[in-house]
Length: 142
Image (cartoon, helix red, strand yellow):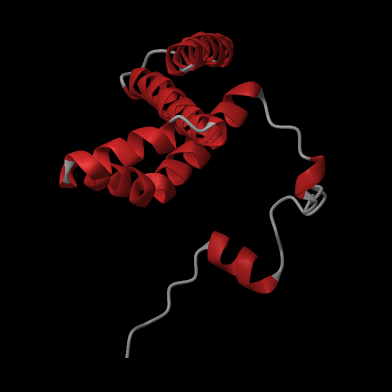
């Protein structure tokens, strides 16, 4: 039988005696104000998950374009629809944002932009560059 080791942290968690019991606990997620780098990071995760969800649509479109000339022309006619163009633009916006925010995260992994001020500036750059590229993607699409 293994002997149970009780460290001070283990005892504090198990017995309800926290180190700082006067610390406020906020469980209402709607009242938490994240800093801009936190919002950018969460949006990066949401965009990545959203892109994962649209992979079947993109694969179906790719398949339709490769089956025959007739299905390619049907897909081309479908892509002329205004709503479908809007959906494609939203997908492109997700790809662009995820790419730019991912590059920011790569810089942070290399140790660049880890201070609070540089993280805030990097987040503003991500928003600015993504906004410009999403705008040009819309111009290119329409």
